[in-house]
Length: 120
Image (tube, rainbow, N blue to C red; front, side, top):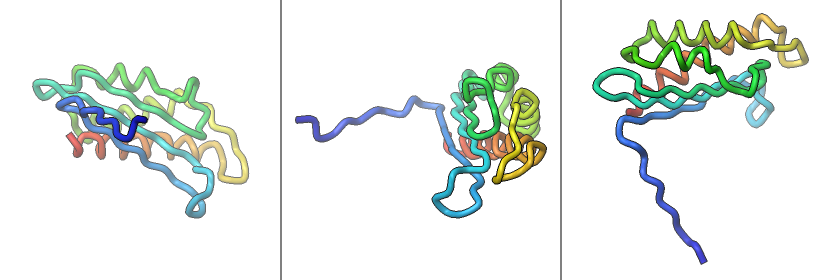
């Protein structure tokens, strides 16, 4: 019987998940997760996942590629958020209009990246 499993965190790696919901426990209006691996002061690998904003395959490969090789910074994270939002196709529903969800995709991506960087 397996009672414990330890998976070491790779050095230089941080991750975060952020979401906006109308009520606690509700489906998110939008959500983003980010994983960063930093080596020698630059982003060696980035992963961005998006939920409820019409992101193809729930990821943002264009924004991930943009970040790789750059120094972690608020400006880089904001630009990656804009890139991620440009590649989403959110649909209006009871949780909000499409332009609001696109704004959230950019902002939540930025916040998730910043939080992931702080955890390195």
